[in-house]
Length: 114
Image (cartoon, rainbow, N blue to C red; front, side, top):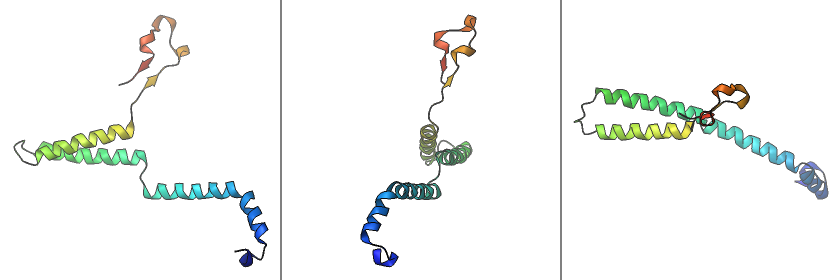
C-alpha cells in the first residue's frame, strides 16, 4: 500500500492514527445508510403490521366461525396487534406543573397513560 501511494510505511501509520476517528465515523455512517436501505424503520414496520391487521380483520368479517382457518386468522390478528404494540410502545401524556391551575392540581392527574 505504501508503494502504491509512494509514501513511507511510517506516513501510513501516522495517517491511520491521525484520521482514525474520521474513518470510524465514515464507516459507521456508511453502515447506517445501508441499514436504512435494507431494514424498514420502526414507523414503516408499524404501518405494515397495521395494513396486514386490517386485511386479516376484513377477511375475518367474511368468515363463518365454523371455518377451520378462522382460528389461524384470529391468531394472526392477535400476533399483529402485539407487533403493533411493540413497535409503537406505550403512550404517556404529561402536563408541566406550571400549566396546571392551582385549583385543578391533583397529584394523581399529572401523568396519564391510555
